[in-house]
Length: 325
Image (cartoon, rainbow, N blue to C red; front, top):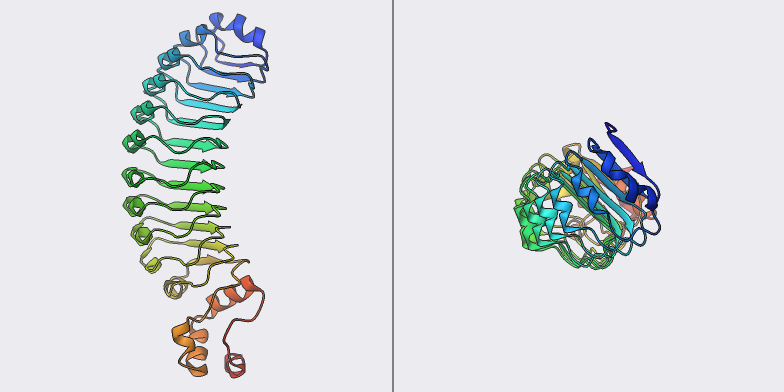
């Protein structure tokens, strides 16, 4: 048959129909409640470029012959909760550019992941038992997007993260036990966006953050354990958007915020910065005139922080309010 796309929604249909679709380029296998393994016929789909497997709760095995699908460009597997491993033959998918896996009981990814030279996008979400990525991931030098979400067993990323020199977008959402990012993150010279959202145990950011010369957007949201930000953010000469929100234990903002504001960087702070001292203590110690001059010069940041905290700033003498307004 010349059918190019097929959506299979029953186990019986899947087992009986694949042989006839030799020209198939897209296959979606969805909501097959009794499917335990893929039929061997799937590996005869020589021109298949997209494969999606969704909501197959009893699926426990993907065959090693999956690696024969050498034309495959996109592989998405989601809500297959019993699937605990991917075959090592995954590394034979030489054309694969997009790999998206979610809602699985994976404890590890195959070492052959590093052989996917064409891979550009890697998305991993809601794999609660996955402790990390294999060291061979460092070989994915063409990877441009890495998204990791709701993987509670990931505690840190190793230094090899800096080997992903083509990476442009790095997102980490609700990695609840992530405590640190590697200093090698500064080697990601192509990185344009960095999003850290609800990484509630993340204690500090790498000091090399200021080396991300291509970074245009930095979002830090709900990182409750974060106390300070690294110095040198003013060296992010490409930065256009900065969001720091709901980081309730952040007590100090670097002076780089002043330079970023002067460069018209869009700085967004809505709430959850109750502990921040602004102006910095070094200015406060010089008295009300110094505070007034500082606030006049950096009024934009002052208003942002005041709105974020929803209360008056610490250590401001009454005459400052008169001088300022």
